[in-house]
Amino acid sequence: MDRGVRDGFTTTFGALLATLGSAVGLGNIWKFPSLTGSNGGAGFLVVYLAATLLVGLPVMIAETMLGRTARADAVTTFDRLAPRGQGWWKIIGWMGFAAALLIMAFYSEVAGWVYAYVFKAMMGEIATTDPKAAAVVFGKLVSDPVSSLIWQWVVLGITGVIIAFGVSKGIEAVARKLMPLLFVLLLVLCVRSLSLEGAGRGLAFLFDPDFAKITPAVMLTALGLAFFKLSLGMGTMLTYGSYFREDQNIPATAARVMFADLSVSLLAGIAIFPAVFAFGFEPAAGPSLVFMTIPAVFTSMPGGVIFMTLFFVLTAVASVGAILSLLAVPVAILSERFGLARKTASIATIAMIGLLGVPAALSQSLTAKTTLFGLNPFDLFDFVSSNVLLPLGGILIAVFVGWVYGLAEPEKRMAAEGPMLSRMAIKTAFFLVRWVAPLAIGIVLLNGLKVF
Ligand code: PFF
Image (cartoon, rainbow, N blue to C red; front, side, top):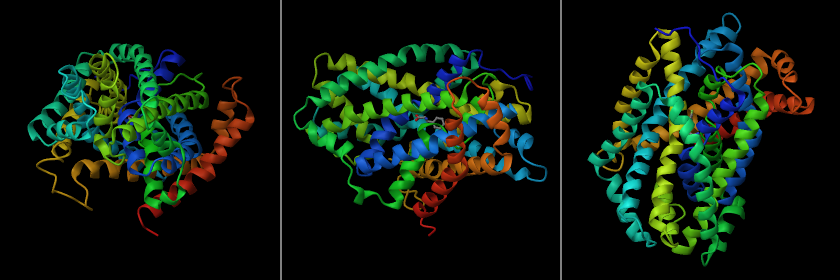
């Protein structure tokens, strides 16, 4: 049993890359474009950017710092840091446990579609710029219960194998080497997409905001995306922070990850939206958007089939870091609190996700009509995690750090963390954690859920 033995990142650069690996994933390539498209474009982007800068970044700093201070899983951290008699702060960790399972239930399904598209790209099945033909291929995949389940299980199976063979560090290292290639491929896509006739309309959709489209529900979705993107509000960054070295510069790490992550999302947006308008796709298509539009852009350039295949391979690879970080939360809790060996804890977590994943995977077929609040299981898991649990976790973390744990101790430690940090930057981050984050999240959450 490896209880109590805490591994850690051996270098500060390694910790930065792992954090980046958690943030960058299907969220950039799949979720960001599809939500931007279905929430009106540029206005949504403005709110998302504000949420990332004013709420996401400070919460990321606060959450990571909590983990490094307590050096424990997301539940035990609050046992260690909360004042006597306030054990209920542990709810943050348990909510994170639930959020990780809910997110994985649909994330593994989307990763499954990406795997399936690797083969479809190779066979030339998706080499079309015709919206109708593209919709047929995607529709066939997601409405077939058997293939939906199988692809999800392939993803979970591969994840299980990576963990069981103890090669996650190696795989992550390979993934990191491949990520610059995905970046380059996105750049190529952007150039091609921007040179299509009618590209201007896509750019206007993405960058010329129509503020009338920003409703409370749109604001909540943008805030939820900011949390989802940076893996915040559910203990992932806390758990990763617990493996950070003492000399890791947390604010600088968080800022770098945030900027890199934003760049990838923006590139994906610039690759997709001009093509959406040029080829006559529907910007509000939802989850299918990237699966139809990206192949269309590749189809319109030489060597399309090869690049298309490579693109889906790299996207699948990019999802690995995010998936491993999602598992890290329940695995740390199960192993550190219940004394399970890490491998056993991982397999148990994957089994729970496998069960919860079934209704999500069947959401376009057998469970399409099984709805709650009008949402099928896939959409419900997404909504409850991104738009409820993560913001709620975020507000609790901000209040805990800003008001309960206090800022004196972290301020002292961070000030000692290197020349990159001016006192101004620290003061600004703490002001945001203490005042802006709780108020902004509170108002957006209550409004978005129609509580007032
Ligand atoms: N940030 C990941 C992405 O955008 O793909 C998804 C994610 C990973 C969300 C880990 C939450 C998390 F804890």
